[in-house]
Length: 375
Image 1 (cartoon, rainbow, N blue to C red):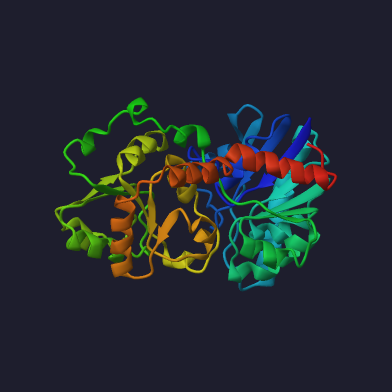
Image 2 (cartoon, one colour):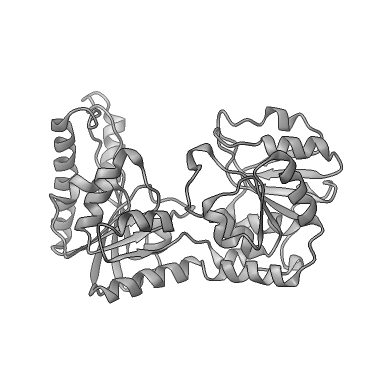
Protein backbone atom coordinates (compact mmCIF):
# COMPACT_ATOMS: atom_id res chain seq x y z
CA UNK A 1 0.00 0.00 0.00
CA UNK A 2 1.31 3.43 -0.97
CA UNK A 3 2.01 5.85 1.88
CA UNK A 4 0.99 9.47 1.40
CA UNK A 5 2.75 11.83 3.81
CA UNK A 6 1.05 15.21 4.14
CA UNK A 7 2.61 18.32 5.66
CA UNK A 8 -0.57 20.27 6.28
CA UNK A 9 -1.29 23.95 6.79
CA UNK A 10 -4.17 23.13 9.18
CA UNK A 11 -5.02 20.63 11.90
CA UNK A 12 -7.18 17.62 11.13
CA UNK A 13 -10.64 18.90 12.01
CA UNK A 14 -14.30 17.96 11.98
CA UNK A 15 -15.05 20.55 9.29
CA UNK A 16 -12.59 19.32 6.63
CA UNK A 17 -9.99 21.60 5.10
CA UNK A 18 -9.08 21.64 1.41
CA UNK A 19 -6.23 19.23 2.12
CA UNK A 20 -8.46 16.79 4.00
CA UNK A 21 -11.10 16.92 1.28
CA UNK A 22 -8.59 16.19 -1.46
CA UNK A 23 -6.51 13.50 0.24
CA UNK A 24 -9.26 11.88 2.31
CA UNK A 25 -10.99 10.74 -0.88
CA UNK A 26 -7.99 8.93 -2.35
CA UNK A 27 -8.55 5.22 -1.90
CA UNK A 28 -5.99 2.48 -1.39
CA UNK A 29 -3.39 4.63 0.38
CA UNK A 30 -2.20 5.09 3.94
CA UNK A 31 -2.31 8.77 4.86
CA UNK A 32 0.06 10.17 7.47
CA UNK A 33 -1.23 13.66 8.22
CA UNK A 34 1.21 16.00 10.00
CA UNK A 35 -0.42 19.05 11.56
CA UNK A 36 1.45 22.39 11.68
CA UNK A 37 3.76 23.01 14.64
CA UNK A 38 3.09 25.53 17.38
CA UNK A 39 5.66 28.28 17.86
CA UNK A 40 6.52 28.25 21.56
CA UNK A 41 9.37 28.33 24.04
CA UNK A 42 10.53 24.90 25.25
CA UNK A 43 8.28 23.44 27.94
CA UNK A 44 9.74 23.61 31.42
CA UNK A 45 10.08 20.47 33.50
CA UNK A 46 7.33 21.54 35.88
CA UNK A 47 4.74 21.88 33.15
CA UNK A 48 3.95 18.17 33.15
CA UNK A 49 0.35 18.46 32.01
CA UNK A 50 1.27 20.30 28.83
CA UNK A 51 4.18 17.95 28.18
CA UNK A 52 1.94 14.89 28.55
CA UNK A 53 -0.75 16.31 26.25
CA UNK A 54 1.81 17.35 23.65
CA UNK A 55 3.49 13.94 23.71
CA UNK A 56 0.15 12.16 23.24
CA UNK A 57 -0.65 14.16 20.10
CA UNK A 58 2.85 13.67 18.74
CA UNK A 59 2.43 9.89 19.07
CA UNK A 60 -0.34 10.03 16.49
CA UNK A 61 -4.05 9.33 16.58
CA UNK A 62 -6.24 7.32 14.24
CA UNK A 63 -8.75 9.86 12.92
CA UNK A 64 -10.38 7.47 10.44
CA UNK A 65 -9.58 4.24 8.62
CA UNK A 66 -6.22 4.53 6.92
CA UNK A 67 -5.49 8.00 8.33
CA UNK A 68 -3.19 8.81 11.25
CA UNK A 69 -2.75 12.43 12.35
CA UNK A 70 0.39 13.62 14.12
CA UNK A 71 1.03 16.93 15.85
CA UNK A 72 4.45 18.23 14.91
CA UNK A 73 6.56 19.24 17.93
CA UNK A 74 6.80 22.86 19.03
CA UNK A 75 9.39 25.08 17.38
CA UNK A 76 11.34 28.13 18.49
CA UNK A 77 10.15 31.66 17.70
CA UNK A 78 12.33 34.01 15.65
CA UNK A 79 12.80 31.89 12.52
CA UNK A 80 12.03 34.93 10.37
CA UNK A 81 14.83 36.89 12.04
CA UNK A 82 17.58 34.35 12.65
CA UNK A 83 18.82 31.81 10.13
CA UNK A 84 20.11 29.47 12.85
CA UNK A 85 16.63 29.33 14.43
CA UNK A 86 15.06 28.50 11.08
CA UNK A 87 17.58 25.72 10.44
CA UNK A 88 17.12 24.38 13.96
CA UNK A 89 13.35 24.23 13.50
CA UNK A 90 13.57 22.63 10.07
CA UNK A 91 15.93 19.91 11.26
CA UNK A 92 13.83 19.26 14.37
CA UNK A 93 10.64 18.80 12.35
CA UNK A 94 12.34 16.66 9.72
CA UNK A 95 13.92 14.46 12.39
CA UNK A 96 10.53 13.96 14.04
CA UNK A 97 8.87 13.04 10.73
CA UNK A 98 11.66 10.63 9.77
CA UNK A 99 11.41 8.94 13.17
CA UNK A 100 7.70 8.27 12.60
CA UNK A 101 8.42 6.84 9.15
CA UNK A 102 11.07 4.55 10.61
CA UNK A 103 8.65 3.33 13.28
CA UNK A 104 6.21 2.38 10.52
CA UNK A 105 8.87 0.92 8.24
CA UNK A 106 8.16 3.48 5.50
CA UNK A 107 11.07 4.64 3.34
CA UNK A 108 9.56 6.08 0.16
CA UNK A 109 6.34 8.02 0.84
CA UNK A 110 4.75 10.39 -1.63
CA UNK A 111 5.15 13.80 -0.01
CA UNK A 112 2.21 16.24 -0.27
CA UNK A 113 2.97 19.77 0.99
CA UNK A 114 0.16 22.29 1.47
CA UNK A 115 2.15 25.14 3.03
CA UNK A 116 5.27 26.88 1.78
CA UNK A 117 6.45 27.19 5.40
CA UNK A 118 7.72 23.59 5.03
CA UNK A 119 10.05 24.44 2.14
CA UNK A 120 13.18 24.03 4.27
CA UNK A 121 11.90 20.90 6.04
CA UNK A 122 11.53 19.10 2.71
CA UNK A 123 15.30 19.35 2.17
CA UNK A 124 15.91 16.94 5.06
CA UNK A 125 13.30 14.33 4.11
CA UNK A 126 13.45 11.28 1.86
CA UNK A 127 10.51 10.62 -0.44
CA UNK A 128 9.56 9.07 -3.77
CA UNK A 129 7.76 12.13 -5.14
CA UNK A 130 6.84 15.68 -4.13
CA UNK A 131 3.50 17.44 -4.64
CA UNK A 132 3.00 21.10 -3.76
CA UNK A 133 -0.61 22.22 -3.38
CA UNK A 134 -0.84 26.02 -3.19
CA UNK A 135 -4.27 27.21 -2.03
CA UNK A 136 -3.33 30.83 -1.30
CA UNK A 137 -0.20 32.83 -2.06
CA UNK A 138 1.58 34.71 0.71
CA UNK A 139 3.96 37.58 -0.14
CA UNK A 140 5.97 36.79 3.00
CA UNK A 141 6.69 33.28 1.69
CA UNK A 142 7.13 34.03 -2.03
CA UNK A 143 10.71 32.64 -2.18
CA UNK A 144 9.63 29.46 -0.39
CA UNK A 145 6.68 29.02 -2.75
CA UNK A 146 8.93 29.37 -5.77
CA UNK A 147 11.43 26.93 -4.26
CA UNK A 148 8.78 24.28 -3.65
CA UNK A 149 7.24 24.84 -7.07
CA UNK A 150 10.58 24.36 -8.83
CA UNK A 151 11.46 21.22 -6.83
CA UNK A 152 8.05 19.52 -6.93
CA UNK A 153 7.13 16.75 -9.34
CA UNK A 154 3.61 18.19 -9.54
CA UNK A 155 2.16 21.55 -8.49
CA UNK A 156 -1.53 22.25 -7.93
CA UNK A 157 -2.78 25.84 -7.98
CA UNK A 158 -6.13 26.88 -6.49
CA UNK A 159 -6.69 29.79 -8.88
CA UNK A 160 -5.66 31.10 -12.31
CA UNK A 161 -3.51 33.77 -10.66
CA UNK A 162 -1.58 31.23 -8.60
CA UNK A 163 -1.28 29.01 -11.67
CA UNK A 164 0.21 31.86 -13.71
CA UNK A 165 2.78 32.60 -11.01
CA UNK A 166 3.89 29.04 -10.25
CA UNK A 167 3.74 27.57 -13.75
CA UNK A 168 6.77 29.72 -14.57
CA UNK A 169 8.76 27.48 -12.21
CA UNK A 170 7.29 24.08 -13.10
CA UNK A 171 5.75 22.80 -16.32
CA UNK A 172 3.76 20.21 -14.34
CA UNK A 173 1.53 22.86 -12.76
CA UNK A 174 -2.22 22.31 -12.89
CA UNK A 175 -5.24 24.38 -11.94
CA UNK A 176 -7.17 22.73 -9.08
CA UNK A 177 -9.75 25.13 -7.58
CA UNK A 178 -11.56 24.62 -4.29
CA UNK A 179 -14.76 22.67 -3.88
CA UNK A 180 -17.67 21.78 -1.64
CA UNK A 181 -19.52 18.85 -0.08
CA UNK A 182 -21.87 18.07 -2.96
CA UNK A 183 -24.08 15.41 -1.32
CA UNK A 184 -24.85 17.80 1.53
CA UNK A 185 -25.74 20.82 -0.60
CA UNK A 186 -27.28 19.14 -3.64
CA UNK A 187 -30.83 18.79 -2.30
CA UNK A 188 -33.15 21.00 -4.35
CA UNK A 189 -36.42 19.98 -2.68
CA UNK A 190 -37.20 22.32 0.21
CA UNK A 191 -39.75 19.86 1.61
CA UNK A 192 -36.97 17.30 2.11
CA UNK A 193 -35.17 19.64 4.53
CA UNK A 194 -36.33 20.51 8.06
CA UNK A 195 -37.52 24.09 8.49
CA UNK A 196 -35.25 25.97 10.95
CA UNK A 197 -37.35 27.08 13.90
CA UNK A 198 -35.63 30.47 14.10
CA UNK A 199 -36.98 31.37 10.66
CA UNK A 200 -40.66 30.73 11.43
CA UNK A 201 -41.12 34.30 12.65
CA UNK A 202 -38.78 35.97 10.14
CA UNK A 203 -40.60 38.04 7.54
CA UNK A 204 -39.98 37.43 3.84
CA UNK A 205 -38.04 38.18 1.76
CA UNK A 206 -35.00 36.82 3.60
CA UNK A 207 -31.50 37.82 2.50
CA UNK A 208 -29.03 35.40 4.06
CA UNK A 209 -25.32 34.95 4.68
CA UNK A 210 -23.78 31.65 5.82
CA UNK A 211 -20.20 31.64 7.02
CA UNK A 212 -17.82 33.15 9.55
CA UNK A 213 -18.10 36.90 10.09
CA UNK A 214 -14.50 38.10 10.36
CA UNK A 215 -13.09 41.26 11.87
CA UNK A 216 -11.87 42.58 8.51
CA UNK A 217 -15.13 41.88 6.68
CA UNK A 218 -16.84 44.91 5.14
CA UNK A 219 -20.49 44.82 6.21
CA UNK A 220 -21.30 48.42 5.28
CA UNK A 221 -23.18 47.20 2.20
CA UNK A 222 -25.48 45.12 4.42
CA UNK A 223 -25.98 48.05 6.82
CA UNK A 224 -27.00 50.31 3.97
CA UNK A 225 -29.39 47.80 2.38
CA UNK A 226 -31.00 46.87 5.71
CA UNK A 227 -31.52 50.51 6.68
CA UNK A 228 -32.97 51.38 3.27
CA UNK A 229 -35.32 48.39 3.19
CA UNK A 230 -36.77 47.72 6.65
CA UNK A 231 -39.31 45.43 4.97
CA UNK A 232 -36.52 42.97 4.07
CA UNK A 233 -35.02 40.54 6.60
CA UNK A 234 -31.27 40.00 6.81
CA UNK A 235 -30.09 36.79 8.51
CA UNK A 236 -26.48 35.83 9.32
CA UNK A 237 -25.66 32.20 10.12
CA UNK A 238 -22.17 31.53 11.47
CA UNK A 239 -19.61 32.49 14.08
CA UNK A 240 -18.94 36.17 14.70
CA UNK A 241 -15.24 36.67 15.35
CA UNK A 242 -13.82 39.17 17.80
CA UNK A 243 -13.64 42.64 16.31
CA UNK A 244 -16.22 41.96 13.60
CA UNK A 245 -18.10 45.19 12.72
CA UNK A 246 -21.58 43.97 13.64
CA UNK A 247 -22.82 46.40 16.31
CA UNK A 248 -24.60 48.77 13.92
CA UNK A 249 -26.17 45.84 12.09
CA UNK A 250 -27.37 44.25 15.33
CA UNK A 251 -29.10 47.50 16.22
CA UNK A 252 -31.36 47.23 13.17
CA UNK A 253 -34.70 45.47 13.84
CA UNK A 254 -34.67 43.58 10.53
CA UNK A 255 -31.24 41.98 11.08
CA UNK A 256 -30.60 38.74 12.98
CA UNK A 257 -27.39 36.92 13.88
CA UNK A 258 -28.18 33.28 14.61
CA UNK A 259 -24.66 32.18 15.51
CA UNK A 260 -22.82 28.99 14.63
CA UNK A 261 -24.74 26.11 13.10
CA UNK A 262 -23.33 22.69 12.18
CA UNK A 263 -22.53 22.29 8.51
CA UNK A 264 -25.13 19.55 8.16
CA UNK A 265 -27.91 22.02 8.95
CA UNK A 266 -26.77 24.81 6.60
CA UNK A 267 -28.74 23.63 3.52
CA UNK A 268 -31.97 24.01 5.53
CA UNK A 269 -31.18 27.68 6.07
CA UNK A 270 -29.90 28.37 2.56
CA UNK A 271 -32.98 26.79 1.02
CA UNK A 272 -35.24 29.19 2.95
CA UNK A 273 -33.27 32.30 2.01
CA UNK A 274 -34.58 34.16 -1.03
CA UNK A 275 -31.17 35.62 -1.90
CA UNK A 276 -27.73 34.46 -0.72
CA UNK A 277 -25.25 37.19 0.21
CA UNK A 278 -21.47 37.17 -0.12
CA UNK A 279 -19.20 39.54 1.82
CA UNK A 280 -15.41 39.63 1.51
CA UNK A 281 -12.49 40.03 3.88
CA UNK A 282 -9.98 42.82 3.32
CA UNK A 283 -7.12 40.30 3.47
CA UNK A 284 -8.56 38.54 0.40
CA UNK A 285 -8.95 41.69 -1.68
CA UNK A 286 -7.58 41.05 -5.15
CA UNK A 287 -7.46 37.28 -4.63
CA UNK A 288 -8.88 35.12 -7.40
CA UNK A 289 -9.32 32.04 -5.18
CA UNK A 290 -13.01 31.12 -5.12
CA UNK A 291 -14.26 30.69 -1.51
CA UNK A 292 -15.92 27.33 -0.87
CA UNK A 293 -19.01 29.26 0.26
CA UNK A 294 -19.65 30.35 -3.34
CA UNK A 295 -19.90 26.74 -4.51
CA UNK A 296 -22.27 25.93 -1.63
CA UNK A 297 -24.43 28.88 -2.65
CA UNK A 298 -24.43 27.91 -6.33
CA UNK A 299 -25.42 24.34 -5.47
CA UNK A 300 -28.69 25.63 -4.03
CA UNK A 301 -29.58 27.30 -7.34
CA UNK A 302 -30.57 30.49 -5.51
CA UNK A 303 -29.67 34.03 -6.64
CA UNK A 304 -26.32 35.16 -5.21
CA UNK A 305 -25.33 38.78 -4.60
CA UNK A 306 -21.71 39.66 -3.82
CA UNK A 307 -20.54 42.93 -2.29
CA UNK A 308 -17.51 43.06 -4.58
CA UNK A 309 -16.57 42.72 -8.21
CA UNK A 310 -13.86 40.19 -7.46
CA UNK A 311 -11.44 38.38 -9.81
CA UNK A 312 -12.56 35.00 -8.47
CA UNK A 313 -16.17 35.62 -9.55
CA UNK A 314 -15.38 36.38 -13.20
CA UNK A 315 -16.25 32.81 -14.17
CA UNK A 316 -19.71 33.20 -12.61
CA UNK A 317 -20.57 36.72 -13.76
CA UNK A 318 -23.70 35.53 -15.59
CA UNK A 319 -25.17 33.85 -12.48
CA UNK A 320 -23.76 35.92 -9.57
CA UNK A 321 -24.85 39.54 -9.12
CA UNK A 322 -21.82 41.69 -8.28
CA UNK A 323 -21.72 45.19 -6.81
CA UNK A 324 -18.94 47.65 -6.01
CA UNK A 325 -21.01 50.33 -4.24
CA UNK A 326 -23.68 50.26 -1.55
CA UNK A 327 -26.24 51.59 -4.00
CA UNK A 328 -25.47 48.97 -6.64
CA UNK A 329 -25.56 46.27 -3.94
CA UNK A 330 -29.10 47.31 -3.08
CA UNK A 331 -30.03 47.37 -6.77
CA UNK A 332 -28.57 43.88 -7.26
CA UNK A 333 -30.69 42.51 -4.43
CA UNK A 334 -33.81 44.03 -6.00
CA UNK A 335 -32.92 42.41 -9.31
CA UNK A 336 -32.19 39.07 -7.65
CA UNK A 337 -35.55 39.09 -5.87
CA UNK A 338 -37.28 39.57 -9.21
CA UNK A 339 -35.33 36.79 -10.91
CA UNK A 340 -37.44 34.07 -12.50
CA UNK A 341 -35.00 32.05 -14.56
CA UNK A 342 -34.88 28.26 -14.50
CA UNK A 343 -31.84 28.49 -16.80
CA UNK A 344 -29.86 30.44 -14.20
CA UNK A 345 -30.83 28.01 -11.45
CA UNK A 346 -29.63 25.02 -13.46
CA UNK A 347 -26.47 26.82 -14.57
CA UNK A 348 -25.59 27.58 -10.94
CA UNK A 349 -26.10 23.94 -9.98
CA UNK A 350 -24.01 22.80 -12.96
CA UNK A 351 -21.14 25.07 -11.88
CA UNK A 352 -21.33 23.61 -8.39
CA UNK A 353 -21.57 19.97 -9.52
CA UNK A 354 -18.26 20.21 -11.36
CA UNK A 355 -16.67 21.55 -8.17
CA UNK A 356 -17.52 18.69 -5.82
CA UNK A 357 -14.57 17.56 -3.70
CA UNK A 358 -15.03 14.08 -5.16
CA UNK A 359 -14.38 15.47 -8.64
CA UNK A 360 -11.50 17.67 -7.46
CA UNK A 361 -9.80 14.72 -5.76
CA UNK A 362 -10.25 12.51 -8.84
CA UNK A 363 -8.77 15.29 -10.98
CA UNK A 364 -5.71 15.46 -8.71
CA UNK A 365 -5.16 11.70 -8.97
CA UNK A 366 -5.54 11.87 -12.77
CA UNK A 367 -2.96 14.65 -13.04
CA UNK A 368 -0.53 12.76 -10.81
CA UNK A 369 -0.88 9.70 -13.02
CA UNK A 370 -0.21 11.81 -16.13
CA UNK A 371 3.08 12.83 -14.51
CA UNK A 372 4.08 9.26 -13.69
CA UNK A 373 2.96 9.18 -10.05
CA UNK A 374 0.78 6.17 -9.27
CA UNK A 375 -1.33 5.91 -6.12
